[in-house]
Image 1 (tube, rainbow, N blue to C red):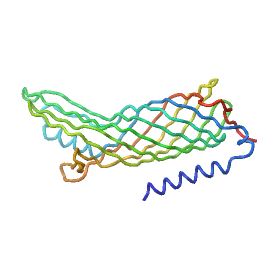
Image 2 (cartoon, one colour):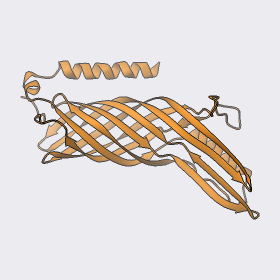
Image 3 (cartoon, rainbow, N blue to C red):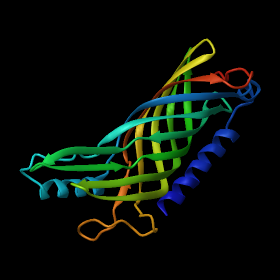
Length: 243
């Protein structure tokens, strides 16, 4: 329910941006850019990290401890559309790395744990911008869809257990954004918050359960950043502030 309200709000922002564009801004033409970016990301992963803590407690005193998943690198590409000087539409694909692993020996026996929970994120963001000389800055909000194809693997001695896990579901993000123009190239930066969490399922489609019997969720919610550049895709003039 909350996601549907956010989607409707985003649609209204886009609609108002189009209908509110002044004649001078419309005549200035649009601009389409292709962007490439990357940056560090923070994740909550509270359910998964609780399971990691529980596992570490089971072997406490052995020196074996798996690090929690707190973040990872993100990288991707997208399209920037500027119908006017004030409205920007961003369509992005971003790959989010999320993993932890540990190998050691307990009483001479090899022990290993490997948890991989990456996500492929597809998002659309509507932003309101101001322009000062070569600098464009603004705020934006949008929705996304997250798909995870991961793996949880453990090995004790010669015994090994491995399970492929999947997750998919909606999310949303809010961002502060800016870019600076250097000739036709634009350098961009964004920082904000992402909310995205969904139930993990095993190979058979059943929910993955924690030690307390509750369903485990992959949770990529947290601080998100983007640093990159964009290049023009069409020959139209870059929108400037209308008078």
